[in-house]
Amino acid sequence: MSAQLSIRDLHKAFGAVKATNGASLELLKGELHAIIGPNGAGKSTLIAQIAGEIFPDQGQIHLNGQDITRVPGWQRPRLGLARAFQVSQLYTEFTLLENVALAIAAREGKAFGMWRPLSRDTRLLEPAMGYLQQVGLGLRAQDSVQALSHGERRQLEIALALAQEASVLLLDEPMAGMGADESARMTELLHNLKGRYAILLVEHDMDAVFALADRITVLVYGQTVLTGSVEQVRNDPQVRAAYLGEEHA
Image 1 (cartoon, helix red, strand yellow):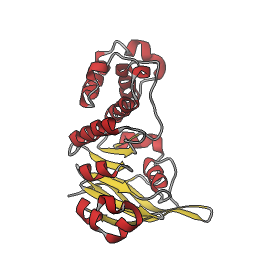
Image 2 (spheres, one colour; image 1 turned 45 degrees about the horizontal axis):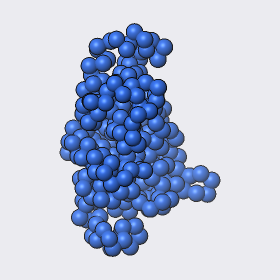
Image 3 (cartoon, one colour; image 1 turned 90 degrees about the horizontal axis):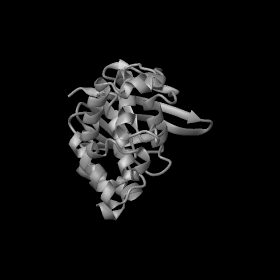
Image 4 (cartoon, one colour; image 1 turned 30 degrees about the vertical axis):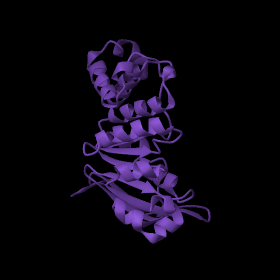
């Protein structure tokens, strides 16, 4: 199976600190691939390089066969990479439907200042409703973002990512700050998206990771120390000792 996203030997240093130190992984078509690791492992820096916020000192990033290592982050969604959760792009004064419609308009190159006529454009509103329904928010379409719970905002952010019509979704700690019920709903949503998109998931909730992931990459000190199935990672003695603990054995 071909890789939709390939990270090869990425290095990024900030002074004497090597934030990524030879990190490599492949995200296959339709796969949900999780990245885990202790605090300070370099996950945030790796994701920032994949998203194009910073460029690596060394190494390559390929998206759908194209070298995007030096492509600016704002161009990457048009090439097939959509990111959610690091920086919220929600307009709290607008409805959910308007937020998703704006995301579609931005993808199509329409200016924000044209919102008034766009708000009546069925070519935007109909697909926007479709994305909201995919994430379980169809009944909240006319509600203000301000009325949403934390978990529902995360669902809306996924709808915005889907609106980019990307083939690869980069999800950065979607369960962060959620309670048990919200985490369960997010896990179900991501499970429903599996196979339709290639998903790279960074997450600390190990129950969710083990429930969702096809493969897992373990990052420690900026290096990928292991990539394998859930069972391979769960049963690796070094990973258990360094990160998982006995509760996930």
